[in-house]
Amino acid sequence: MTKKIRSYGFSTRSVRIGEEPDFRDGTAGDVVTPLHLSTTYAWEDPSTPHSEFEYIRSHNPTRKVFETKIASVENAKYGLGFASGLAAETAVMQTIFRPGDHVIGFDDLYGGTRRLFADVFTYLDISYVDLANPDDFEKAVRPETKAVWIESPTNPLMKICDISAIAAIAHRNGMIVVVDNTFLSPYFQRPVELGADIVVHSTTKYIGGHSDALGGAIVTSDELLHEKLKTMQNSTGGVLSPFDSYLNIRGIKTLAIRMEQHQKNAFIIARFLEKHPNVEKVYYPGLEYHPGHDIVKRQTTGFGGMLSFNIKGDIKTTKTFLKKLKLFAIAESLGGVESLIELPTLMTHSTVPEDVKQAIGITDTLIRISVGLEDADDLVADLKQALDAVSI
Image 1 (spheres, rainbow, N blue to C red):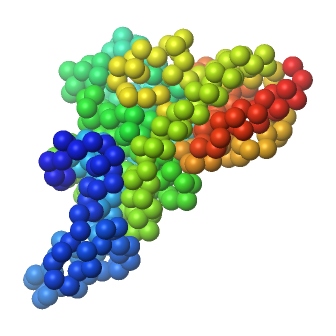
Image 2: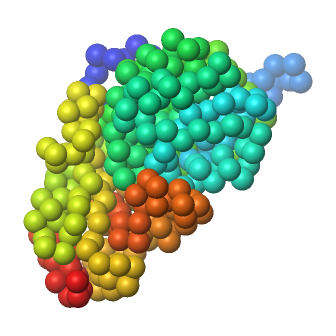
Image 3: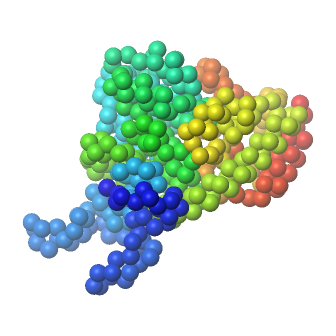
């Protein structure tokens, strides 16, 4: 459990919490958390562990710092580190769902989450609903509905839902509210403050921030849920490694300044794209005409560094445009310092059934950008030369 440190600002907590120097005899007074690689820890005698650490799967000093820090920046009481975002999601599903449970998910969930529901948790009854409309959500609730699974913004169409309104409806019906906060990070959005019971992250993205650390996280302020999730973490063993814990700790420390620059660059690119004649539509919550703009202003402190757009033309046009780019790397994932671009229908969402993709708007001309930290003028120039080069 985190200490009572809410009076500190976000950046102070992200840098300092969990890493207070240890001045006990024999310690070095490390300012930066050491990388603890030992897989097991010696006991003083068979009945008395030397410390809270016994075995790496159950606990690790480096992972403990990460778990303390991720909870603090999410303004939650408890944090847990996992080997990946999908490992974190799997732990949530294994902990709270039972055969026959009904789950409501946002219709535009990340393709990997939908695949997990469809291919692994086949014993669940999943309804996909446009949660941008709370009335549609309420109509979909049944007596056996166990939970609602939210992304806001969604991946890749950047849809927004009113998390507080959805949470209020869910809690009236005895449901658990799960929010994937990967896209905005704790810097721009803290779903626990909006009524979420569980928040999940792929820390591989903005938390790590440099495309070199795999990880996932769960945060909650519910003590009972935490105990159940911690038991699942220990029992199934999909834990965050010490080295990835170390890298994710480092990433959290610069999250604030990185997110500000991601957002600044994203705004510049969104404004450029909306004016280019070869672009049909731009999806970015920071734009005033975005359907969720007012909700985002109310429930977050920023709009993030992710955006999508439709290019005019067809799949051939899209592929030509992507191949013309020089600075943007055509790659899956997001949230790193480098700008990435992808075609969801063939990449991150390739496993989503074709009829579902068409119904929700994941078309051959939809392109998703993770805006990096390069000079915005260079990024715009790269997009412009590629857009100008395609024939519409």
